[in-house]
Length: 201
Image (cartoon, rainbow, N blue to C red; front, side, top):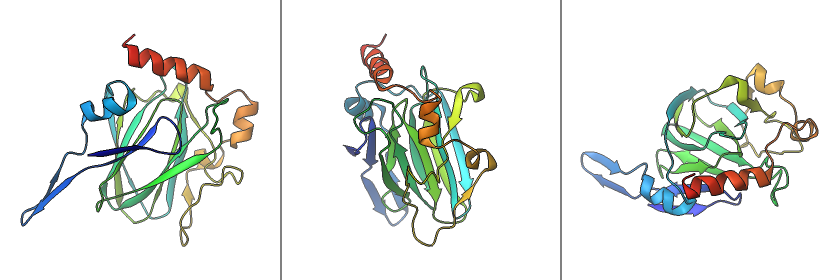
């Protein structure tokens, strides 16, 4: 299993080693001990989510209030997605920047993103299915969104994709509007929270 940090601190691409034979393929899709070596603490999986999306569906940009926010470990079970990690932590050196990873059933990569980061996916095929391992349960009162089509954010959707966005996400504020409203996590608060996780506090 190869784990590499992405261009946004606190996010990683995980590429498993696959073992194919005439029966199919076997792989370890998640290793808590190996991930802990990279992120500094064990990911305590509290909830798993599965979503199925038609081609062009864009889900996000989603994030949750800190603490506890919600760390996520995402992998494709069928089809393919572009997975976006967005730095929405006010005061971060990479605030407003994003990185992306192709999730599919060829390389079978996964993405981990720490608490306080924004997340979005874009489905590249009909009936694409993604699974999330989450560090906290869904709490609608603490969940927020940023419009994924915000031109200043500039998420690079693949050519030929007509984005299909929920009414809620389409009505969400831009990144600058969310920042002006004080609705975004602050970088120093996130760093303190990561230190607490690493210390086991």
